[in-house]
Length: 367
Picture 1 (spheres, one colour):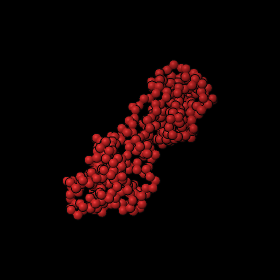
Picture 2: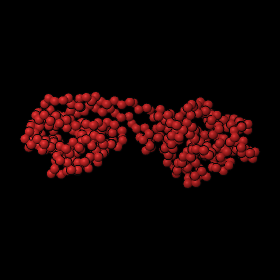
Picture 3: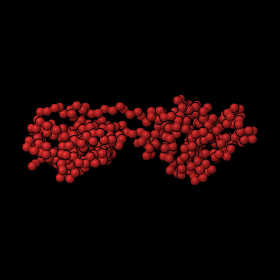
């Protein structure tokens, strides 16, 4: 029997409205916020993680990047080491500041005092670079760092009068050492970074896609089954006819008979719609996503249904119903592509698998 025989009659026969016609031509999803907006929404802890991911993209000479933010960090949030000596050798400090407003010079000056105190107490050496990292840098900080010589002079004058406990708790001797260290420290080491530049550099890391998944394109209209059957439909349609023959041995043993049957006809139409819905999903995945997304969906569904398919069932019809029901309820690995999968696609994937004889419905067909 030619399984494609009479499929035109199947398509043309009157019956309930196709579920495919109820879908919009393209699924619309809310626009993803920009990476800048996402970063601005981070709390201080998440912002430090973001900086930790970004720093290695700056210099391939870093032997290690360590996040140290927290109580007792002595003003170090993310440290980048240039040698295995760590904090005792050349290193760069990335000071993370996530506030509701902009980062001002007054706040930065307090962090510099904290850093100087850490050096005189033996916590670490003076970093070769000290970068203030914040979503928004205020004009007072920009202006101060653009004039490193005069800013150091002003800083030292303020340092002698400061009431900052980080300095006053040191005692007279260590306080004098802080003042001497400040005088010897080139303020050119203190820098800021532009958020747009950070994002461009973060884009080169493996963390980018996880933090900022690309906006999902809309799914095109679902393909409708062609009036004339395609050769690739032969095997799954043949399997469906075997199911109908087993259930209605004298009334639905060929495609034309099945098309006229009150139960088999609508069922066959719906299964073909499902097959082409899944085919639409496959083509969409190939065109809009990296390779392997559709195959991952097929694998998830196969893993979810194969034990049901291999179980004992009194008829091929019961096996088919059990397998497609399991496919519809199966959990899928959550990817950006998985949001496009509809229940009809899941049934269609079962027929894609049947087309490759990965699934069969009737006994004696390799289930």
